[in-house]
Image (cartoon, rainbow, N blue to C red; front, side, top):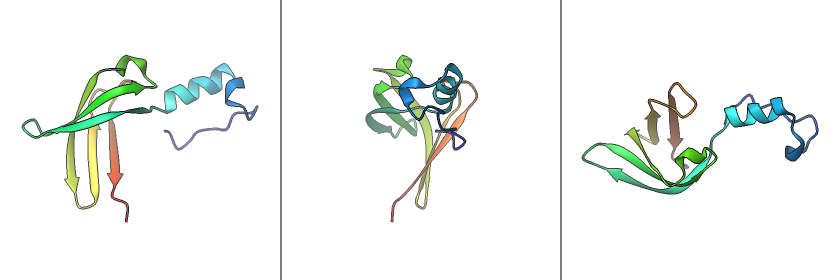
Length: 93
């Protein structure tokens, strides 16, 4: 999710203007499902059960990853919205 999300004027997510809704769709992505590690390819495999980007539903998404200290980083060289993306998870303490 983009850090620069602007609140809806109506204070109701079901009453967003076309511009507000577009900003939400273009500024966020959520998905859930299982994951596995392909050690031979050094990739994280995301088994997409469902996503806010429906084209990913039921697919496998592969991401290269690194682990350093308390951080897991994975990159998406061709993101669904164009460009690339990097995700960083930090171990909770």
